[in-house]
Image (cartoon, rainbow, N blue to C red; front, top):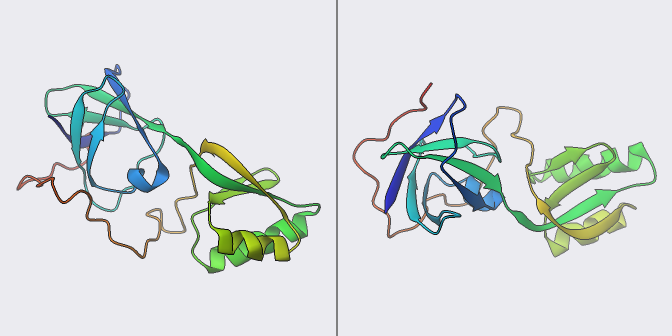
Amino acid sequence: MLNIFIKLDVPKQIDDRVVLTFDSRQKSRLRVTLVSGEDAALFLERGNILRGGDLLEAEDGKVIEVVAAKQQVMKVTADSHETLMKAAYHLGNRHVPLEVGNGWLLLEQDHVLKEMLIGLGVSVSDEELPFEPEAGAYGGGHRHHDDSGSPSIRPPSRILKNAR
């Protein structure tokens, strides 16, 4: 199994790719299968969210590109900017990861939030798209649930910091 410890800050030639949903890109310890079919384990610095296009370096020097997987999301649109801003306010008030675009919002599927949004007068459509929400006011995102990763992965005693 390939072990991956480093998130690169400089471009390098890509040797393989890993396709991950937003939920998986938030985890620092994770067992994955690369596009090539090779199994790998991520042992990354805690608190970082991987983005589509990020590069990771494995212990053998291979460079792995992170690809944001298509996943089930809700696309929110409205007839007015004011109505869309009200929807964004209510979602932000609930600390919902949210991708913001020109005239639209994307969020993960949630039937309760969908009912609330429709009640606010916006249109909600179910889509399958890559999801890249805003990082949050302090850059690290906000989570309320466990981020322990797979229990079958034992992290090494040392975790390398981001490489430059």
